[in-house]
Length: 179
Ligand code: 5GP
Ligand code: MG
Image 1 (cartoon, helix red, strand yellow):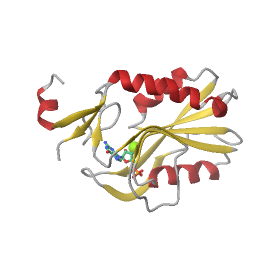
Image 2 (cartoon, helix red, strand yellow):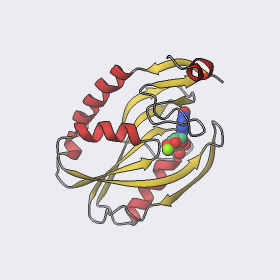
Image 3 (cartoon, helix red, strand yellow):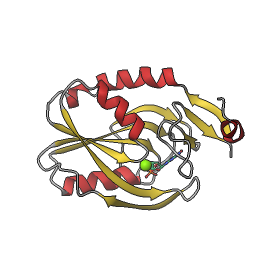
C-alpha cells in the first residue's frame, strides 16, 4: 500500500498478488475436466471479472472463445439492491455450446442465477460458473456456484477488478474496505 487513498480507505489486504496468482494456476487445473474440450465459450461478467478472467483464461490450455455480458446488479454503496438485469447480452453466442461463466464474487447469488437462466434460454448446451471470491453467508437463492478460487468472510472487498463506486479496480490485490 503506497497511495494515500489506500491508507485512508483500506482496513487490510486480504489476498496478495502472489497468493492470487498461485490459486488461479491451481483453479485452471481444477477446471480442466470441464474446459479440456476445445470450443467452449468463456463468458466474462463485466466489469468486475475483467482481471480474474484475463488471468484465468490465459492459464486454460484449450481453445475457447471469450464473450461478455454486462450485468447491472448492485451496489449504490456496499449493499446489493436485489435487482439484477442483463444490460447487454446480445453478443454472447452460446447456442449449442458449453459455457463457463466467470464472475468476480458470489454474494447473494442473484447475478449468477440470472445469468445462467439467460444463457440456458439462449440455448447453451451446458453452463457452469466460476468466481474469484465466494462469501461465507446464508443465501436466499437456491443456486450454488460450481467453482471458486477463495472463500471469504462477508465483508466488502475491492481490488483485482472489484470496485467501490468505480474506483480501485486496478489494484493487483484484494483489500477490505474500512466500514
Ligand atoms: P450477487 O448478485 O451474488 O449478490 O452479487 C454479485 C455482484 O455484486 C458481484 O459481481 C459484484 O459486482 C457485486 N459485489 C458483491 N459483493 C461485493 C464486494 O464485497 N465488493 C464489491 N466491490 N462488489 C461486490
Ligand atoms: Mg459484478
